[in-house]
Length: 446
Image (tube, rainbow, N blue to C red; front, side, top):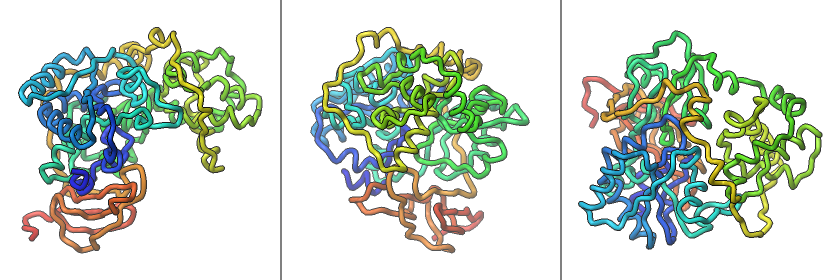
């Protein structure tokens, strides 16, 4: 089964993109499948749990047997009534041992390490992974891809949420490598002349302007596109130069420590204190042990977009410090002490409804996305590195004719990487850090 997963080029569909054949090459007590949809507004995972519930449960049973897991748990929010019903029906029909774990509607409930604590009461060590506490976590989209891999189908399509200032918001089923511009056009275009696109969620997503969308392409790890006005608060924050952010941190931080008090990692017991990092920057202190705390920041954005009364960006400061430390090849070293969650944690969970209101995104909430619009592409640009690890090596040449589902780039099974497949029938017309394939109309490709 590991070989099938490897051949299919499966990586974590939730955003990190860790190669699944590496992640599942283990034996653990718990298999946890994440259906909590960490970021606000996203609908993709809910759609998959409604429409692919049987596939998800079948794949969980197969993976559970392979890794010899004692417990199979799928976690989702208690407010997802329809999704719960579909999953319960699938579990009953398949006579599966999968259990549901229901979460409150807080941010970031779907964060891997927060999820582990909610379910097991254990904190993953600082700088560690769930395997350190004898479990493995995968996204529901990954399980759908595993089901397809068992049946011989590689990862060549992606379900994405497309919402915001779009004429027909909804779920799209698109080929890997299609441009974001084509996705937007397929959904009727934007209601605005000038807009920006948040790729991913509003808290941790990457922002591109309208002029750049033609050169941005869907990958295996993308889950959503949110169109917002180019003068939206989130966009303007993202455009602030790092020099200004650092100067603001040095001059305006009042050391209230709210960024630390509501930090999800701090609350599960990690030694991460954003206010200390802000102080170090402001006082030009270079105490290495404090600065290294930035390395365990998950960049969830609570400190930046929800908490700070001065409108500062501890998240970006942490990210900046991380980059400086990594350039020096410095890594976080655990102190070996036991990790204990803060008793106050239960009272410091951020309600998603309040977060959406704070971000001025409430009008983009949508429900009842029951069908996916399937979008075709005449040209795809398929990145050779859509995952954590090494780039895949092309095994096609310019001028080659390829079929949908055909492998076009590969890695060895021992490498941290993933195989890449063509998402359309066509001809290879360019190879660089991506493979460009053009569909040939009115011609059968043999």
